[in-house]
Length: 177
Image 1 (cartoon, one colour):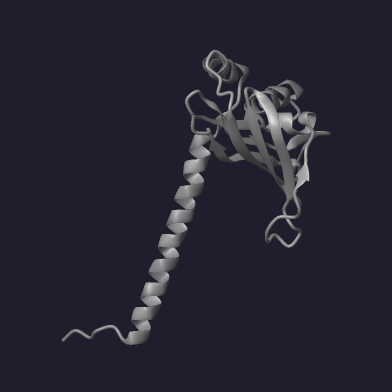
Image 2: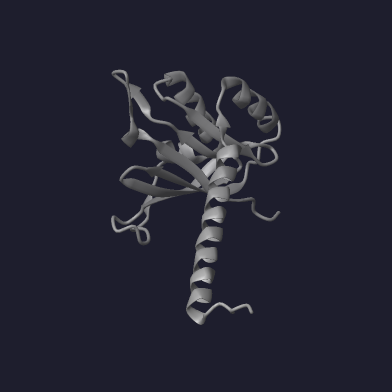
């Protein structure tokens, strides 16, 4: 004769299954992101820019997060006819909940978060070559950097962990004609 699982044992089993499937989901999300990011190279950038520059998108709104140890900021840029018309930055609150007040950016501060600026950011990091790795995820039609990972800086024969940073395009919108 088979005994059925007691109510408590069923709850434990369901809890364990929930934990297991949550772990599987988190791992697969992380792994999918890792697969999208590939080592950046000048050739990769040249190939993508060969597609981008003949047919650039001249009007768009882009929201780019910069994540560094101890600091996160969100940059919102609007571009019309290839010119920056609106730019602001917000810093994440120290407690991690929400964003501080927005501050206006001038054109030089905003440019790195435009599409041409994102290309130049990766190219400049490749030229400086003091990073242990630079990885990028190119998406879109035409393609542009949607996520950039700057690995640790290599200094005095050591990788400095606190220098890892990520640049992530959170939103990209093209206005309706």
